[in-house]
Length: 388
Image 1 (cartoon, rainbow, N blue to C red):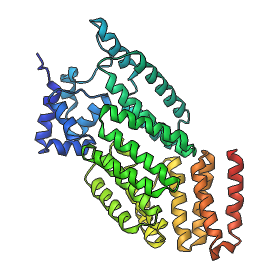
Image 2 (cartoon, rainbow, N blue to C red):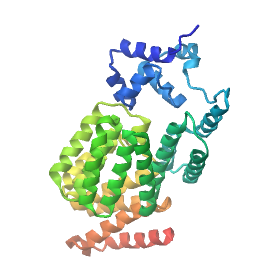
Image 3 (tube, helix red, strand yellow):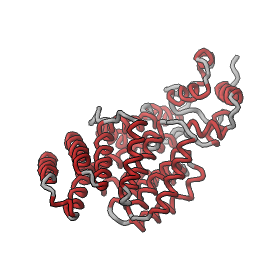
Image 4 (cartoon, helix red, strand yellow):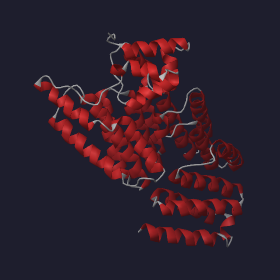
């Protein structure tokens, strides 16, 4: 007969075989040490099969070992033996997409392979809101966590449309749910995105204060969340012309990303080595150090030669901006026009706005009289027309 906490014992055994501490496993997995401890002690169950398989990959647990302890893998339905368990069963059915699937939906949206995903996330939020009003039970907190992550993803999609009011509302909801759950990851990520919204509106001092308020939650957050915090804060400093704190934050992000493997949470929140280097290059370009920016872009080109569609558009525009500030008008215009074409294809008002700002800045410089800029002006007019 299998012991009650077979899965937790299996995780502990294979972790020790690799010579890892709970903190080591937590860092590689992208969760907190306390969460790993709770799994090993049988106090928490994993939310999804994806989490089980990810742990098995990290620890090299053979498939036959997982098959032998099938009861340790979370089930998708709950036996109802008492009336009060009905609420938990109803919430279990609504939780089928899980947090992992919500985060995956954002990655698919970035690739523009499923534009309808935003509508599906809105439907999920509506269903969860109604369920949380009507039902309670053991799965109340997991449902709230899923709702918070859905709001985060919807907020980021709203930012791409430049619907900043809607984005702020989604991020506020995520923060409120994080406070309810006392979840440091949800609180930090929500406050980071709010601070980034303030940066986009040019309110740099208020943005920095928002990041300072989020710092109290960092100690309990996952490494991926800590890393994205420093990446976004570095961008605030770069946009406000503060080179020293920019460099300090980007180096902290590089230190964090160098010691962890890619995870779904990290990828969904733009925290990988490529993302950190991209932020570094963009910061150098914004600080009018284009030679340093181009050098870093050459590194990211080697690191990741292929990108999802929406990401490719943003990356190409940012890279073109660095070349333009370097004085290479031919290469810079080629890249910016290519990025603008992509942004127009998937109707990103935010990225088209980037190109408009680049054009306005160029017109104010001596290079602004170059007739080749007329091509960019005409392309922007066409992009705005298609966006209407």
